[in-house]
Image (tube, rainbow, N blue to C red; front, side, top):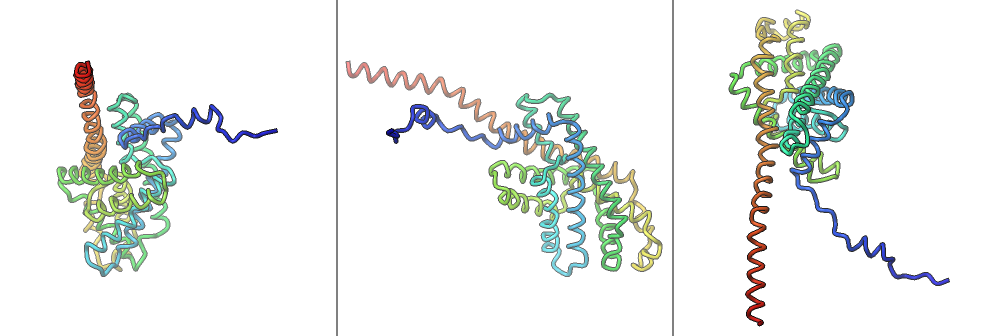
Length: 317
């Protein structure tokens, strides 16, 4: 029996097929956003709880790394920012639904892949899940007595960070929220360019380190940080304050009302604008206008080609 080394007709046909076109980053973002919106509600909410906890853990890491540091102000914050990038890395690699990256579903909405109502429900569900995850971590970190680390200086750092977040003006908090989520979503956007996990991790680190070290405001991180400060202020033993030689009254402005109205609302709105509008819709508009220009110029190109062919035929005749 003779075995032919010639490729079969089906193999030749398959090899002659053009390679599938690589999706642009905008197209990948649309798919990314659509998947988030249509995901099963229970799955979406559960993954959002994980994401809220991941970001809280990242803030714990940040406080631990920066507390008591004798280094320069900028370098200390940069190192803390690298530590904080653990949160977004866990979300991307392990899987999680984070509100600040979920707003990129604005691209899917712009392409009419999902309805406005579906997007709003998705954002609300993820936001609520992130809040639950953050609150669970506040409970666990408080019960663990983390605020007593380094002679209580860990808890003092947490109080100072939380209080600082309440001292922004409304406009300042809103703009810091815009800047923050521009960096978060640009980091996520870059991960669309690769399927390699290690590359994704590296790509996420600098955008996160940049926004953290620069003091930009992340709504989900604040859901953990400020309530942690409020909890320490309300429930820490008086002896703890005495040992640090500080008054509990110094942090009297750490209240739920101050947090919600002076930080959480403007920062959340800023995060939506920075990620969903500036990054998501910004890139979508650029690609959409480029595609429209290509479509409009196509008839002219065909006509020019026909005229050129006609002229050549006339010359030959």
